[in-house]
Length: 198
Image (cartoon, one colour):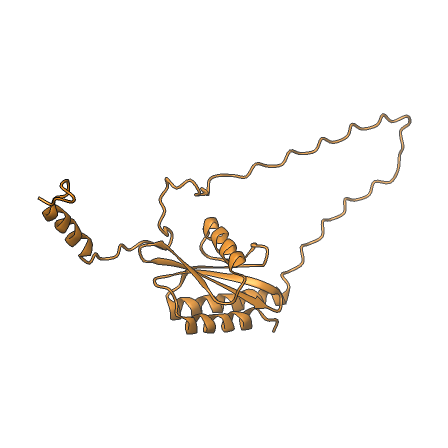
């Protein structure tokens, strides 16, 4: 019996320590579940519909004193929406090429890009809470370089803020392990080239 800690059983403590030191195979999470389940309060379900704003009431028509007869004009056709600007289309194509390159070379998934206000430019993740987290981390850092946060057993959220000709943008991606500084520098350079006007 230990005179200092009589309530501890040395063999049980040793057994617990050995269990903690055994290697455990990492759990494999899908890209759609970066460490949270449906009991997480912050989940936003896809079946939740935002409340529609109330429709303004139409003013009551004024009473007519006399009947006015005039030529009836054909209702004007609503203008066709303009096709997507070629520069916007080319930008989205460049972002898609960047996304494919990032996934191939760095095994990145759930890639998203936010603008300086936190609005989504490109998103394949659909995880609003990751956008919120990335935006807050980028605002808090204000320096160059990346920030990474472990969000699951084999999932790390890499946040790479970067200055472009259009202002600061934030790249977020889930990777299996944190990226070294030289890889982050390469990603930043390629992202700046991708976001620059052609």
